[in-house]
Length: 92
Image (cartoon, rainbow, N blue to C red):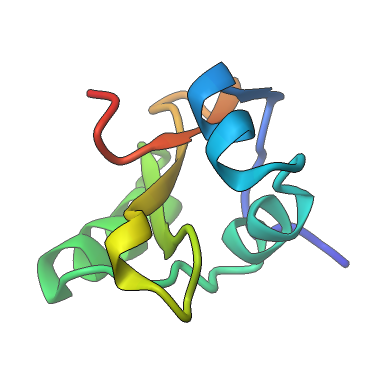
């Protein structure tokens, strides 16, 4: 697997790790190959621009695809591509 951008150092928030009940390496892999999950059209456009110009990259996935009440998790690579964090969408 080849990433389409640099991920930098990887971090997972404690809340995301507890909610997911695992390390989300599959979500990080999807993020790295531009499978960004549940984004708005504007967010998709912004990701494309930021991959060309170097900027923050966002992905959003359901915690449990079979139960939407479980919330969502976001994977964000920072604007300089030095680090990527996985956290609950509610952790702003």
